[in-house]
Each structure stands twice: as C-alpha cells, then as structure tokens.
Length: 370
Image 1 (tube, one colour):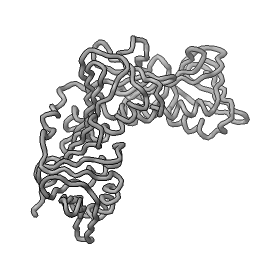
Image 2 (tube, one colour; image 1 turned 30 degrees about the vertical axis):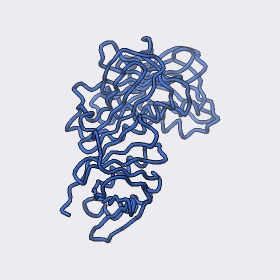
Image 3 (cartoon, rainbow, N blue to C red; image 1 turned 90 degrees about the vertical axis):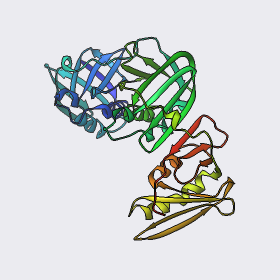
C-alpha cells in the first residue's frame, strides 16, 4: 500500500471515524482504524461492533493495500501536522505504516487488516432518503430524551417508525418522551426499528444543514441500519425488543394551557436550576391567567423567583419538574413559542411548539410535599 493524501482531508476523516473506536474491547484490533485503498482514495473504517463508521478520503494511489493502526495515535500524529501538508502513507512489511509529511517521518506498528471485522457499506438499494437538515433537526429534538441507563436497553434506543411518506422518531426514558414526525423522500411500507441513541448522535454530528439527502438502508434481516451520505457511511446494529407504547402516555386533554416564549422561559429556568441543583433539582411552575408563569426554586443555599409572561387558559395550577428535563426540552427544540398543557400537579406536562403539530414532548412531574 502506497498513497498520498492531504493532511486536512485525512485529519477530518480520522476525527469522524475515531468516534466509533472501541475503548474497552478485549479485541486489540478494535482500538485500531482500518486503512484500505479503494475507488482512487483511502477508505477509513472504525467500529466497536455496535456502530461502524466509514469515511472516504480522496488521494493519489500508487499501490493498493490495507492495514490497521492505533486510531488515537494516528489521529494525534496527523493532527499535529500543518493543514496544507501532503501526507505520504506506505505499508512496509506486514504491519508497519510509514508516514511522511515534509520533514516529519514516523513508523507506526499495526495489526493485519484481515483481523478487522467486516463492516457493511452502502450497496443495497436505499430503503428511503431524508433531507439531511430535516433529519438533523429531528434527531436534535428527540435523541437527548433517550435513556442512558442500560437497565432497560430498549430505552437507550430511539424508535423509528416508517409509514408511507412519514418517519416518526420517539425517544423516552422513565421521566420524559420526545416525538417528532418528518417527511421522507421515498414512500415505504410500514416498519418499526429501534436504533441506538449513540449511533444517531454520531449521525447528527455528521449531517449538514443542507437539503441534500441521506440514504437510509434497512438490512433485510432487520438487524442493522445504514446511513449513507457523500463520503461517509454509518452502520449500526438495531436493538431487539418491544419499544413501550408511548402513545398511551400522551394526555388526550388538558385543563390548563399556557402559551410561552421559549427563550423567556429558558432564561427563567436556568437560574432556578442553579439554586435547585444543591438539593433535589426541583423547579416549580405556578401557572395562572393573572400572573402568567412564575418559576421558583428553593434550597438551603437560597431561593429564586422568575416571572414569565404567558397567555393562560383554564385552571390555575402549580407543577414541579426536574430542572434538567425542563432545560433539555427548552434548549434542544427549535420553537419560538411553546404551548404548555397541564392537568394539575400530578399529571404529565406536555410541551408543543405553537403552530407545529409534528412534535410533542412530555415531562413527568415531581411529587412534592407542598
């Protein structure tokens, strides 16, 4: 294997694929990145056996070949080079990669490419396509609500439900639910899969703010999903199991509705969260037609009160939430104004962007003594 690539292209490729490198595997090769010449360029691949990321770097190939080298070491070495530098890569012997750039030269010991797991790449006909910026927004507004606790593995994933020309993404832990429905470019038969939230987070980092589509391929065995955009593939295993029926948790009616400016409520919640963080992290919202929404927090370190203008209909009520869940929905969802729908202090609170029926976010209340 002998080739030349530009430093900035190689550095970007390594930064993308290295996010899939395994940090705790008992297989040493999973700490490596696979370098293989392909299609007049260099194909970089990394995997932790749950997520695999492949990135194509344009280059000038003299001889074909493949090897694997430690991902972190190679990434750091390449990042230390000037961005305008040409990098020459040459496999010497069975497992030694010679790297030269200007007056810099090094040898890195690797592991034979044959020991690296096979990773699926785009080859099957796409199941459907989605605008990159539409999918990125949907992921940003849902994935954060997935559980991080492995006690219920199904909740560490995001439900992706395909129906005709619509895709609905739903994420939930034991305290909140986020649901977003978007348009897809190619109608499909009804299907539901659960994709690990970590894989979708990595996908969101790569997606651009463009209408260019990302291709989505569901493996025929329904055990993997692959996302393909120009120069990059992300493949992820799917999570087995039945995702909870979140729809039965969505309140069908409400007794109180408050229309609030999202930024104003966020500005009121953030200092309340600072006070609340020293105790049980509880923030209270008192909602009434006379006062709008009053945000309060009380702890041993002190207390806080913030008033937010709101258009309120229905009964006056007070509800307590975990401050982090309030901050998450207000920070991640693109909306100018929210409609906050309540059914008293012990029922879930529902956040709906005003004028946008395709998103809903439900937050469970916190029981308090008062």
